[in-house]
Length: 133
Image (cartoon, rainbow, N blue to C red; front, top):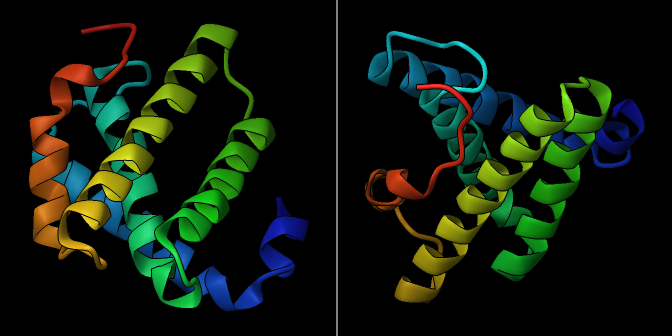
């Protein structure tokens, strides 16, 4: 994971900010932060959205930013191993977040406002994958 981050050191502050922002928003929205729950699914989707949002300025297309976001979040899953079903859940929710970012970007034909992304995320909550209620 360190190699991935150090190969693009200019992204580190943006990834860190996206991570802190994800925790802040999730903490306000959910009381329970157990693993494998809807709150964890939300957190994974949001984290992918916010990483892409914050690093977009370094990439010409949303797909380039999303490819980098995928590499970062996949590496996180590889470094912090879960049970196979929990890892599959995390990866699926990561993808949901990236899909939300891309749809919103294409809808406005530019980087969407954060408020719009959060609205799209709320609208997609029924598609989250989680193991426990």
